[in-house]
Image (cartoon, rainbow, N blue to C red):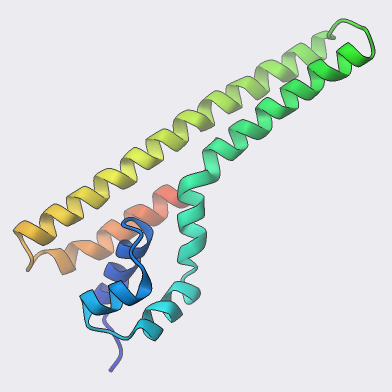
Length: 148
């Protein structure tokens, strides 16, 4: 028998937000571990986990490295920074600042959704299956949203 959309969404929530292992998820939801692993592959849950953790900070880090490279190049050439380089560095710094903040915001938003779904599961278990797809849609939108 095929698992319901709610069961798959709940499995994704447990994997992406709570970092549960497929065998543990299978046990919790009464499905096979092979099914959970297949869903993980089909829906690319690992990419969502990585994107959740890394998107903003990596872009911010790359921007800061580019700023350092511009400064280093000018030092090697024993010259002052050009106006164009200063403007480029200012733009890179703005992007770095925005993305570092974006990453913190995304992490906080995802953590809040995780806590909300856990609270509902505990206090209103009959309502939880209906809210899991909404929560997973929220997670997808946050993870997939642009970082700039």
